[in-house]
Length: 302
Image (cartoon, rainbow, N blue to C red; front, top):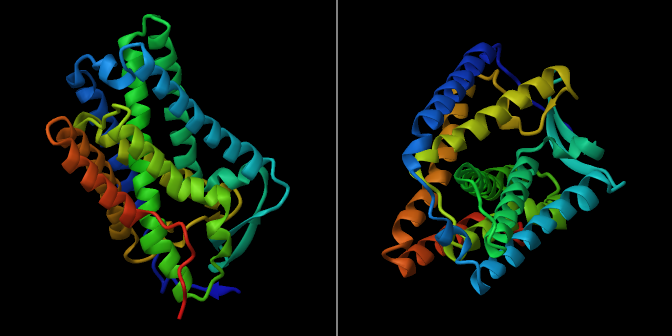
């Protein structure tokens, strides 16, 4: 099925590009200026006291890391079956299915979320091993692990929200096939990443500090810049129709996406702040949020 879109004579590419670049620069500056405001991270609350609770973290985190690595390698990149994406081709303005192969499958924001998820779990799992074996861990490395977790949580929350509440309803409205959205690797990217990061946030001791809030904007802005390069000098398409920077309302829509990035990250910040004093309330809020974000079953269409 091929669907044509119209720009109605508009091209706001440069406005959108300058806007995204400005957000990126300000976000990087904010992160650098606030990096030391976190102080020294409480390594025991993040990784346990070196005994049984630390080894539980090791097993959980490295299992999650393996899930991410297995998904990327065997279910995606090395899988000879093409991945089916519904993309917008920049020049022809056609929205149609496109078979992706190999590394091309990692061009989606969902794939970036998966990589952040795996990197977070792997790095923090290795730090937990160091704690369990009484190996000294530099403070900057502990902060890096928290930064990866925070970026991963924000990205996973945003991915789940957009897939469930924007992409799937749009595909239903346009009469597109949803089957490929519920394959195993899609579940890991769109659902399990958020669920498992939420478990680490609630039970594993991980936190999402407010001083790292700009990480969500950095990840989002870097992806949008990558997407523009990919559409112009790469394979010629936008993975998501709604990130095309040219339409009349594109700058506002891209700002809205940045807002979703912030809201997703703020969920993690709120839970991190609440859980120390009100763990049951934090658990309730996070469970409700995750339940409203993920979708494991294909919706029935009447």
